[in-house]
Amino acid sequence: MLMRTDPFREMDRIVQQLSGTSGTWSKPSVMPMDAYRDGDEYVIAFDLPGVSAEAIDIDVERNMLTVKAERRPVAKADSVKMELSERPLGVFSRQIMLADTLDTEHIQAEYDAGVLTLRIPIAERAKPRKISIGTAADAGPKQISA
Image: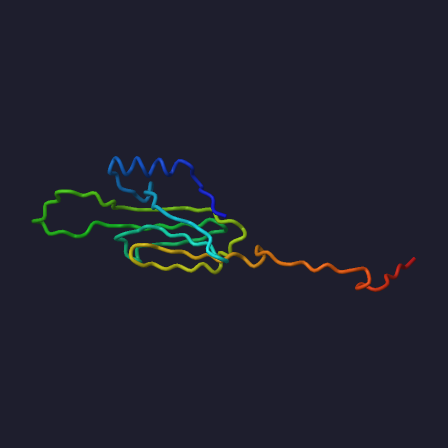
């Protein structure tokens, strides 16, 4: 029910990770995610360690889900000299095309321990249902007018 919008984003993420470049607003880094179905809802979990909840933006337009976040450097005193910096900073973004069978009006978002979890219910119209079969006797006699 989910579809990646850009097949080359994973390669971009690996190159950014190896080159140590940060994401910018014009070219954000990709955030890792897991997506799975749990009963009558889809769950998407994004890793955003060190990002405050206020720095996360979630939008849905039609069936396109967009999650953006920014992780800024921690303010350091002038006397601090950085010896090693491996934690990615900058802008992170992910766009996911959602299927028509998901109810985008009732998405729930929760942020805990650096993990943003979105729960998207399966739309009622997409759930399996039984169709009863009537018989000709149930319908009664049909009248035909000339």
